Image (cartoon, rainbow, N blue to C red; front, side, top):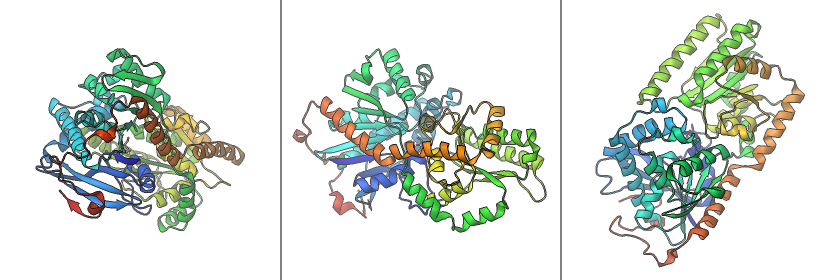
Length: 490
Ligand code: F6P
């Protein structure tokens, strides 16, 4: 089978370069190994891209990375508009932040259709397409409209909200109907899948028994595939990073003081304000903890042109400054707040230096930082994970200290509990979490989804793909992938 993986953001960073986004970082090593073609945005836009698609292709492990310049006229409406100002807030149950227009929706559909046409050149008789995330809810339907009968899988990295909340998205019905073009629709948790099926049942009136939906496209199977990490690799990074200058400088600067760490994109779904409030409250209620613990919050800026993100950046900068102003001393600062990214290797070293990992989103599909923090710990003296019960990871990492991120007092108490937890309890909790991480790695996730996609398509298959014309030359002049690797072409 030839696998084509599609995501908006792609990555070619090595473990020593700063990483961009959970999805791209997670996919990179498995896609590299699988020999798949990974197709995504180049991060550039071009006038006329729609008429004359342009891709840069380079080798990626055993496969290839194909990066498309996106149509300039539609990029803003697609990415900042419909994807991140309508779908993202709704998927994270923040319909109050939906701010979009019909033009944004048109641009979203245009970019989905643009990707579908671009993907045709990678189609071979035995190709399967695996589409990632909320940027491409309608891409499967666009492929079907172009006559593609190959296996089409979709995986959602974010949560799927309650039925009436998704109903707050303009054009919600068209979008979910379009999703049924996929043979297999994967979710992070049972709760996400159940919410989706409740929408399909309630709003579309379709039978969803056993997670199987029959629509005009045929059968779609809806299933749960919790994404994992490579825990052995992370542990190796953490051990190696101990001597990295950033990590050793941090350790020296702590002077024996304990450290709590948070690593997030600046996004309203991450619960950063509540977390900082909880740290503040802990220092206010238990002043004896001052000078014995500080917080390192790494907060990479993201989607800054969207008003809700710009406002949050300003709010956080002010909050950190207020807390440091109130609790700080001439030689002690409670919160180090950094708006920059770090490589996976350095991050693993920073996680291992911290006695407490704070992962407290208001809503999160999975949250791989939680898993990475656990994997990076020193087995003989592990730190404690404080984890929001609203992160998908809480389903597996149930021996973390689970918190309600809306209960600031409760979080303040739990952080203090984590700081004083005895070694035996820390080890027992950590070993239970590591066992879960080893039982569901990123390699398992990838292999399980691909196998389930093949099975779902066998059930669904009505037209043998071998009988189809392979390449519509009118759309793109054909050039073999091998010849294209490492070059740019039209
Ligand atoms: O599903 C979440 C996700 O797609 C992750 O890859 C990542 O955390 C984030 O969204 C990336 O967002 P962006 O590509 O807009 O920076």
